Image 1 (cartoon, rainbow, N blue to C red):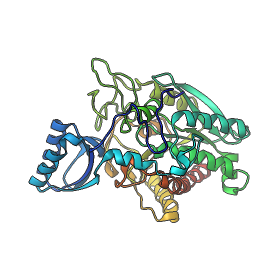
Image 2: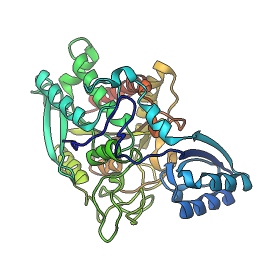
Image 3: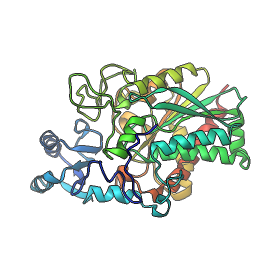
Image 4: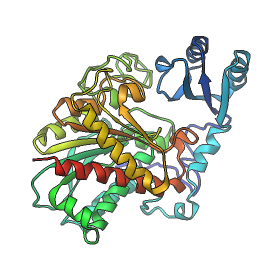
Length: 418
């Protein structure tokens, strides 16, 4: 369960004890030359920038758009350096704390502690929701305990489908990175779409009759709780590093596939720390063990992230193309066509390494390496304007369009599974 001392008000996350970001800014820069790249890397060493896109300075290159968060104390110096070196920049958030508070813009819903699908819910609320879904829809939903997090919170997968169905399955996780709140919001929404649609939507009824969904609404629970109680910008899990004062491993760098190679770091204080060994983290082990125990039935793996508006597929750790890369591209293209049909939201797709940036130890590559040939990572809204702080007023539209894409993939998997 979540920590008992959550501080919460109608408009602000954790008023009492949380780290505050008054005066902090989020900057978007357009890097044109190698000199610009060297400047940003130098700034990172001096000021310890918090990169939003890409996720570390090691990835930046000329002709790239880069978003990063800077401390209030460093703002004047950094902006001066950017101007002095003719780096074009835009301030996305003039006051990051105001942006954090503005994210919770569904003020009418915020007056209630009850679970709502178009607001961001804390961990205790999500836990109660999962139990309620299983008790009220026992014909379709059951809960599977797959182990505990580092801090001892139970990780629970929702199995959604006809209880007696045996056949192909899809595993979906949300919230592997703690600050990407729209991701867990989607997993909750999607469960509701499946359950509510079973009796009134022939497409969903067909899916749930012939297919099982295993849905993990928050993979990085400890980190997610920490974003509500201490630091809204936290990314990693909460395990302490050996021989360091720093906490947290990037769980999407900890899976046992090309571990701690390109796009990850063995430095515990970085945001892309790979952990002390492959699958060293409780959360990673629990997910891997569950998938391996259901490997015969799981035909697709989908991991929901934010932000960038992309559908990605293997490989992440190499620029080589996966054996069925062409098929994965066609599926992604079809899914994006469905997604954009609702609100004209523009997505791009492609192999992870070349479409966003290379990473090693990622969950989608690991799932693919285990023989799950339909493996995808979604990067939900937006493309940077609000970044990790997508307002609650966009939850509904984001989840509705994403549901169309997931259903497209699910139908494809069903029709191509023996």
